[in-house]
Figure 1: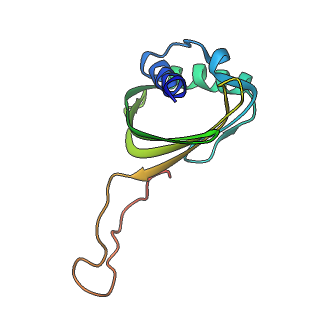
Figure 2: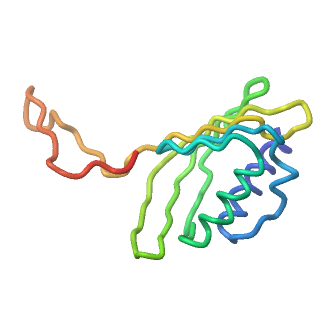
Length: 139
């Protein structure tokens, strides 16, 4: 489990430092990577391209790991994420990644799931729900 957690910390560190510190070493060649808001990358070459291209448009400010869960060839990691794009847009949310490992301790599949930080109780004032009239986040 320590090796898997080290690899995940390394992946997050790459985003925080905007440096490829070993993408080839941590992902299978035929990895599938799904971002929380929909984009899907079908191999390591595309994951590398996305990483380098995205980092020309934005900066990951915070990507903190809260906890890990391991079972068999899978790991779930809960995290908090915040970024700032070149246009000034700031995004932040809680998330979870579901990771499937290959036998060589490389990531075979990674799916991200996001959770809006702007939460509220729609039943706070009674039995009829009151939903906020606001733009829903990208996820």
